[in-house]
Length: 234
Image 1 (cartoon, rainbow, N blue to C red):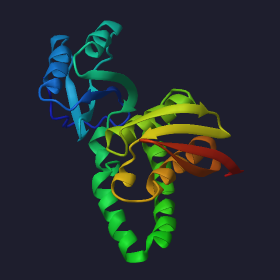
Image 2 (tube, rainbow, N blue to C red):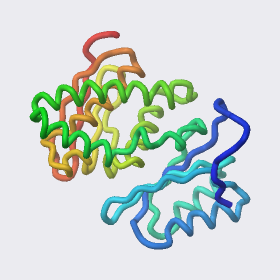
Image 3 (cartoon, one colour):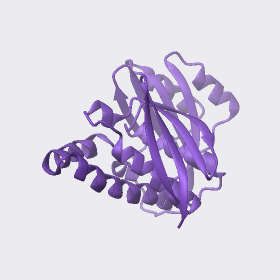
Image 4 (cartoon, rainbow, N blue to C red):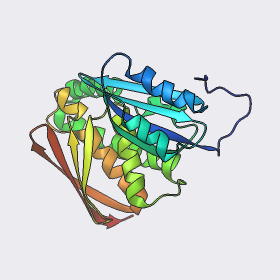
C-alpha cells in the first residue's frame, strides 16, 4: 500500500531505502512498479515523479530493502530501463521541493532579465554553491558509502528533481571529476551555460572533499561535459 508518510512519531535518524527509476513516460508504468512492490508486502512511504517529453523519473521511499530478485523483476518491466537503490534518510523526499528545478529556473530567468546575464551568472553560481553544500550536509554527510557513491546519489537526486535527463560519470577523484550530463534544464530554458548546475556540482564536491573547484562546461551534442578541478583546500 502507499501511505501518506505522516507519523506522530519523529524518526529523524531513521534511514529508509529510496529507489530511483528511469522510465518511458507512458501510462501505466507506475502502476506496474507499484504492483511488484506491493505483492512483496513492502510499503511505499513516499513518491516523487517528474517527466520531460518521452522520459520520466520516479523516486520511491520504501520501508524495507529490496532483494536481488525483486530488483530483477523491476528491471525486467517494459518501459523501465534504469533502477537504482539509494541509502537516503527518511526526511529527504519530504524536503524535495528544495531540489526541484522548474520553479527555481523560472526565478533565475527573471533575475537574468533584471541584472543581465553576466551579473546574474555570478550571483546565481554563488547561491548554487551554497545550495550544493547544503544538499551534502543535510542529506548525504552521514550516509555510510564511499565518496563516488555519494556523488552518484547526488546526481540521481538532481536528475529525479528535473535538473537533467541522464548522466555518466567519466572520471572521479578528489582532484578531478568529469561527468557527462544529458539535456540540462537551464539550456532548455535558454541559458548559454548551466550556471546553477555548475554551482551545485562545485558546492557539493567542496563539502565532500574540502577543496574549492573550478568548473568547465563543454557542449557535446545532447550532452554537456562538466570538468571540475580542485583548486584550493578549504
